Amino acid sequence: MYSILAATMSGGEAFATSILPMIILFAAMYFMMIRPQQKEQKKKDIMLSELAVGDTVLTTSGFYGVVIDIADDTVIVEFGNNRNCRIPMQKSAVAMVEKPENA
Image (cartoon, rainbow, N blue to C red; front, side, top):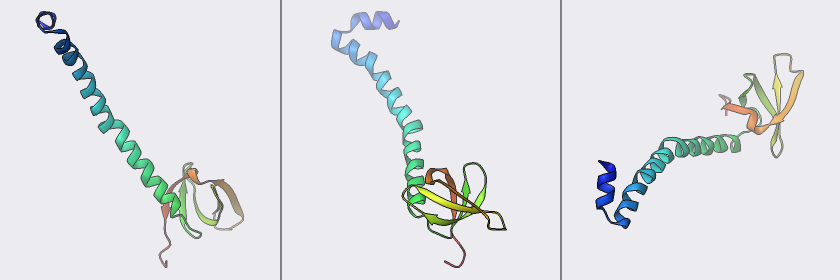
């Protein structure tokens, strides 16, 4: 049926009907995959830009700690109750930020 329909159409109409599904597919992929990823990245960038000393963070490896110093793209996080474990890590390793209650 499709080949009969394409054979009866002119060259421009056949091209338009063959390219239209590809355009629709690309638009659907954009709105279902690319756009949500960009929104998530924007939220993470805002979260990391508002990161401050004293914030409690969850790292991508699953550790909770308190930020004690911030450099350009590095944060120093203090882990544990004894306050002896201080580890420098990239800001991108921070998965979640919780602001202190008294701030």
